[in-house]
Amino acid sequence: MEEFLATVLSFPTVVYTTGLGLVLVYWLTVILGALDVDVFGVDGDLDMDLDVADGADGSADGLSGLAAILTALRLRHAPLTVTFSVLTLSAWLLSYLGARTLMPLLPIPTALSATLVGLVAFGLSLPVASLVTRPLGPLFVLHQGKSKQSFVGGLCTVRTGRVDGREGQALIEDGGAGLLVRVRCDDAAALARGDQAIITAYDPDEDVYDVEPLRALLPKSDQGTSDS
Image (cartoon, rainbow, N blue to C red):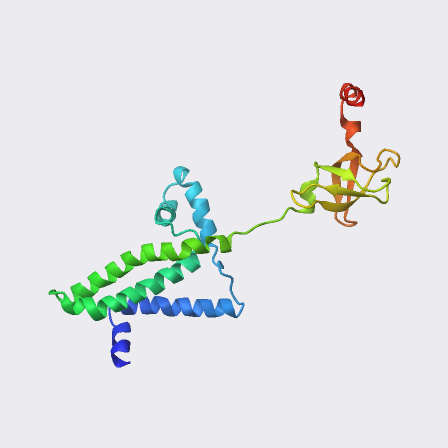
């Protein structure tokens, strides 16, 4: 135990020991619910900066350079906090092993060998972090569902015998089983079961869509052709 503590608290491993301590504190706060996995929003800043890097100058150069490096090393599959945690842990392990096994064999001054081990540990931890975080990427992809307002302008199919100014139901094709919603139309005789209608508005207070018959919006020539 004494040899272990002496190694992790001496250079170069102590650098990564400090970082590992910060990582442990961070994940403890995440477990307790005080912070989010991507609380600092750094990934969003990197994405935005990388997109505008060609047109930016001065203060954006450092961040865009970091974004480009992370992309080249394939370290952006997971949130930056996750990547940093894996990177720190792997660098700490490699630095510890290097300090215990490699440093005593190097015929150079201790300070130089320690620096060399620290740099090699960091360099080797980059591909390790890339390999570890790559399969984790899908776990952090955000899938945002469509909002009810997003269906405005789309088509629906009437599923009730009639649709009036107060009540009616229609089916919206959403790419899955379909979405059955409440609809209304000022002209109570305009729509019947099976008719297609276009959604013109959404009332969030009553959770109902305003619809109009699709045929009413088609040119008369198209209507005549479809009827024949």
